Length: 180
Image (cartoon, rainbow, N blue to C red):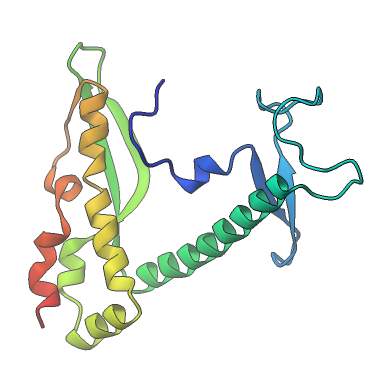
């Protein structure tokens, strides 16, 4: 397939490099997928180490990117734990119906912020979430859920969910939450 959008998620951009952690989760080792077609030992492309065995500027950039990615990954884990504690997540499923036939395609096993549950939070809790920018993250998440509809359109399919508004809603739908 062809990536049809300008933004490429960091999860994909980091490939073929990843960090592996030891058991305590504090020490990380950079790993590379040597099966990646762009990885070679014929001297083509960017070198990872110079002739003295020191890391190149390219490898230094890769390591900085991996470090930044890991920091954001850890922040995401903390944020998701908070969403769970506040019981703001609900299981989601999208079913796509190809226009050319062939049966439904299902996307499941993911959670999404419930706009209805956010609306029920107390003013104090909303103020706390706003002060830590976590409320903004929820809005961004809800806005990104609209991309599921765009993916379906690119696939030449239509979304067939019980409640399409859960996938197509925008942060504006929560406008009354932030006016207090």
